[in-house]
Length: 114
Image (cartoon, rainbow, N blue to C red; front, side):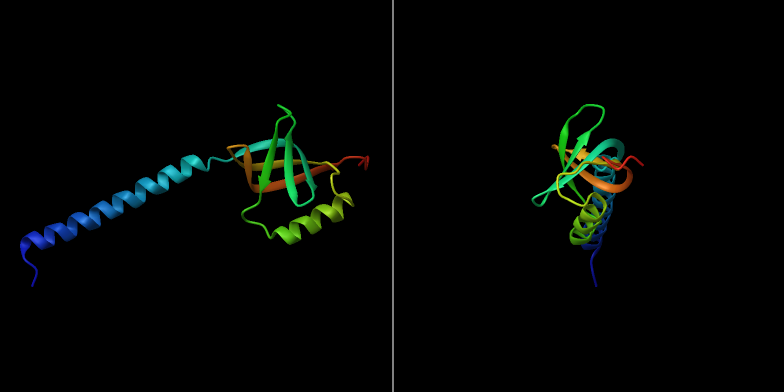
């Protein structure tokens, strides 16, 4: 049987672990604060870039929830070539000039008129 001191140590470790997990989750939520960006998605030579309409800043795009092969296939199917800007609204988080995309909506394809 465990003596009282060992039980207290075990309880202390469990409580510390629970608080550490809660703190870590809250910090991750703050870091992954999602915002909406409007601008142009441009793909070429294996790189996805977003040009922000408001600031004209350019950021690298990452799509953590998407299959990249299918995403490239979608871009080429819509734009019919690389480096053709596709106007879109992107929901995501910007960190260190990298925009992590949570969701996106294609709003207009440059040169199509509709």
